Amino acid sequence: MRRTIFIFVMFAALAHAPCAAAAAQSSRVVDRIVARIEGDIILESQVRELGALQQLIEDHAESDDKLLEELIEQWVVGTEAAAAHFPEPAKSEIDRELARLGEHFASPENYASRLNELGLSPAQVRQLLRRQIYVERYIDYKFRSTVQIEPEDIDSYYQKELLPELAKTNQPAPAPAAVEGQIRELLVQRGISGQTVKWLDETKSRLKIEIETSSGKP
Image (cartoon, rainbow, N blue to C red; front, side, top):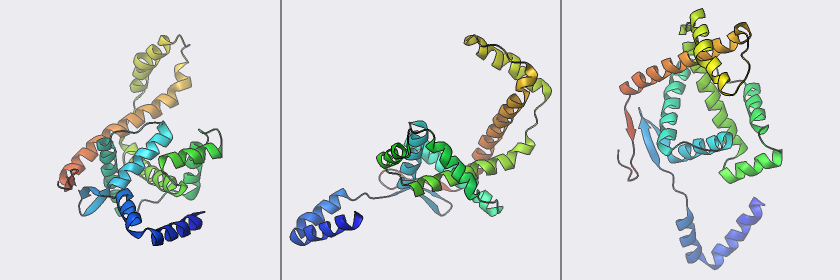
């Protein structure tokens, strides 16, 4: 199909060269640099890709400013992880995440249709998920061992957060021992998140980061 379209366009161009050239020029998607980090660049197309992935997973995307901030933070994490020779995710790990994503759609055809709507290829989704897994795994590796959760922290969450939340919907309260592991992991994730935010803020403050305006000037 792609080749057929290409041949048709070639014949049309021979017959109407000036008109076709003008149309091609007007419809061309121009990429541009939206940020520079220590000699590297982030492109507008990368912002669009991340937004499309968020729509695919969550049915909505953050603002372009938030997407760019996330890409900058991915660069920070990815650069340090690569310097530390942190291992890339295994193919099976990426395959597992792709399978989970596909389960949210009624059929493979429905999934493929949604990708087409968002302008994403399966290869792009795979690469975006690979990067996301890599960043998340490195953050977990970097900070998990530094987060200390005490028994009183678990009890406090159970009493002050879990029970009131269950009471709002008249759900029965589980025994503390039954949910201890889940609460511990939740609190660990909170601790990792807090340390990550602090580390990223400190690291970004030491880097040369230039955000480009729509005119192309910092």
